[in-house]
Image (cartoon, rainbow, N blue to C red; front, top):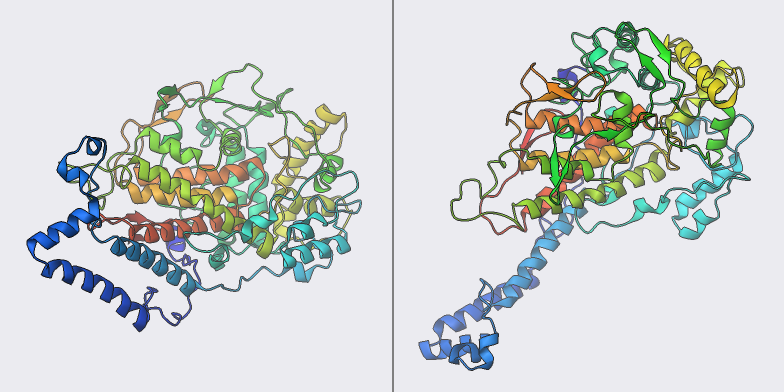
Length: 619
């Protein structure tokens, strides 16, 4: 996707309806005549009365409001404090203002309405549900779901009760649990309601027969095959060049960055967000040392053992200790049935800590974080000066903390967990999109002649598939003593993929929301000093001397790393999961900031940020 393409993407993710009765056109609540009159009367009569009272009378009233003892200096009063605030003499004003702010937020939420959510139509098109998620349900011998069980699953979604999900059939012998299907039905007390955010039409989950599905599937296969290629080798490795050429042939159906219409090693596997294709693939904030509670943290990771040891010229040897998973059909089928795999992690046999140096390492990081931790970590590294809209930017006498300081920022980042509820609503109640291991099991079934599925020829004829067959055959031989050469997607994670539908990706929604908060908080055009990149084996960082890097661009890369990292492990898709999730998370964060702004006492406080589509907004 070119820059021009990305700028034209629809990013208004809230449904718009006419303002409800009792609301202004901008969504603010209009008080009823009776309520407004009473409120105005309360304020007017109280202030008028105090203003008309004589000095002595007003003094008595003030004393009665705060008590006599602080004024007369008794021994008992020495232990008491005098409350001094703008509303101490009129507490109703404060309570009324708080009510008004909450009412206005609720009225704006009502304006959003509850939109209808389009789907890709696969669930209706295929009676055997091959285009949908159904892990842990009963399946036949080739992994197709039992129709009656799937219908009961749909009935549970329609009822939305805890008991209904408890009664969803499970495959005999399976122990897998459905991951929190009710999570998307929780109400939010701030920000939009979970169903109020829409899927951008450009990122609707591609149907399994489409060329867009083929493009995102082929990318996943290449990411798996190239997991262990060091970033330093991308310009010299001919297999990387082959991946670029394969993705280029999909044209506009591959929604990824291109240079002159061509996927190049520099932009391979990246997003076309401002700054995301400049410099190293990994964000500088993931290479910086930071302090957590005074503890120095140097971001060298305990990494997984590679499956392939690559040479810079593209030749390689298989590593005898490296492992990926779900490469044998029996293991894949067990996973679809919810049977625990029992695989162990296989970490670097030399126990060497490394900086992120390849796709496998990014995937490992994205499977090791805890919701918002990477964004707290970025803030702890220091992102430079605050946004110019921060009211304390030019103050010489005051600083922020509970508002417009670190405490405030931490609170905002912590608030975006509510975005997971939007994620869960769309996963379970809208798309029910298959995980990549499930969706690409269709490829193996088709090519192994177990079934005949309507997959696009550009997927079935991709040059990556013979490479994947050899890759899987090696793993099946060392793990199971089998010569099976499958076309299944090799997963990095020993436990496979989670037991909830794919689209959108929770990591992507969180990344979109948290990065949007950080971009609103800091000056995006601040230049990164002394940028670095890993050496070939990730044992050290070396200077990066290329194009200038900025805070905004590196935050966009952070969003890429923490969402695409899940693709790199094999558990999510680019279009259906990452791009949808990032734009949804961005919309949720903008709404949270908009609501929060109404609560601040500081004058002229604003947030300015550049959205993922390149447009700049001020809240």
